[in-house]
View 1 (cartoon, rainbow, N blue to C red):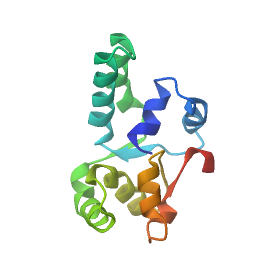
View 2 (cartoon, rainbow, N blue to C red):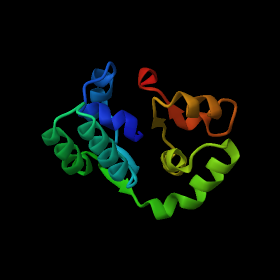
View 3 (spheres, rainbow, N blue to C red):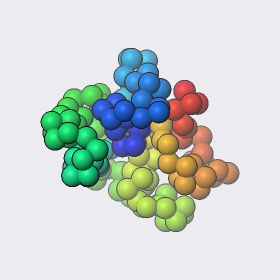
View 4 (cartoon, rainbow, N blue to C red):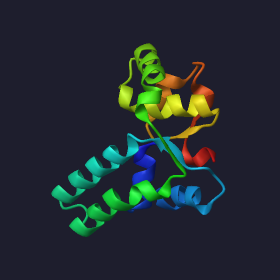
Length: 134
């Protein structure tokens, strides 16, 4: 899953309940290690904009790394992420998650509609899904 889904575990959202199903143990939770800086950045922004309290932002930064069974080193995914990003004309950050899903032959859970639209009719489409598809 990507950072926008993981953030829903900490910050109330319309899909928070759906995101929490991922924590129930039925799914292996893996992500590129890039997810930790992305979640920390989101927590910082939400704290700075007074959307969440400082304590919750700090908890996100501290606790996020303990949720995942596996955090893949971004260095191992960079080449594949570059290839995907270049072919999709999409930001490479998002493509690290997809590169991991391809490598592990699983699906990346995302709410990124722009990415999902770009994946339609590509060889990578089968490696992504929305929370509703679980």
